[in-house]
Length: 226
Ligand SMILES: NC(=O)c1ccc[n+]([C@@H]2O[C@H](COP(=O)([O-])OP(=O)(O)OC[C@H]3O[C@@H](n4cnc5c(N)ncnc54)[C@H](OP(=O)(O)O)[C@@H]3O)[C@@H](O)[C@H]2O)c1
Image (cartoon, rainbow, N blue to C red; front, top):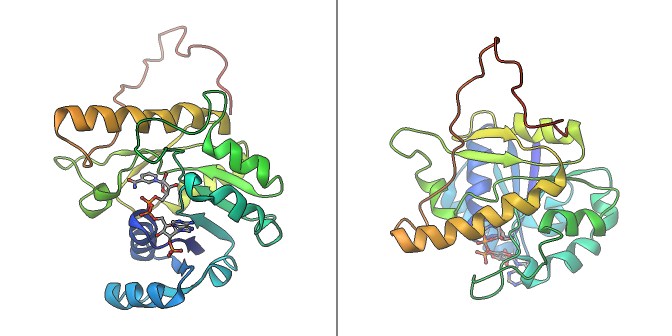
């Protein structure tokens, strides 16, 4: 699968390297193509190519690695036509500039804001809780941490989970896009906890659980929403 990444910051570069190592062809796109070229030359990965945003947008799967506070929503709206029908992997957490809170209200999420701007794009939220340094050493005492994948498009959600095969994370189907409200705010909490307990930024979530036994009558908390 070909993946186009927009932005060469902390997340964009690491996700490009991760997907390239998992066998995908990646175009790392930057506003400054020279910058993307320098980075891909240093990474020297055979599946990694540099380009501008335009080249990255040619891929069937596009991952913008840009902050909402830096104008991502307007940038994406200008790309509406190129993104129509494609899968967009949304990694946004709508942090303000000092990371003390989100710039969006509790009644929405970065993922939903993007989906509203791009009604013809298949928006899938993922990687929201993975702080950038975790990509450099993804295991915690030999344990892989979680990526919660959300979307209202079931097929796109499963495709993004499959895209993660061969990467060092466990991918959980986290259901509908509105669950991004919870998943994104989990990042706000992990940032606060990590700072308080000295983990920041090497931390992520992992859901602990055991399979229910067949004899148990009620093993759900209610109708699960796909
Ligand atoms: N950092 C984390 O640990 C983390 C974890 C989970 C999710 N996220 C999410 O991932 C996204 C990127 O985070 P990041 O930490 O990688 O950000 P970053 O290091 O600040 O990089 C963002 C990139 O966005 C591009 N960009 C496009 N328009 C921009 C503008 N007007 N101002 C500044 N940069 C602009 C730039 O790349 P070019 O110049 O190459 O175009 C820049 O390098 C955010 O939505 C964030 O919420 C971050």
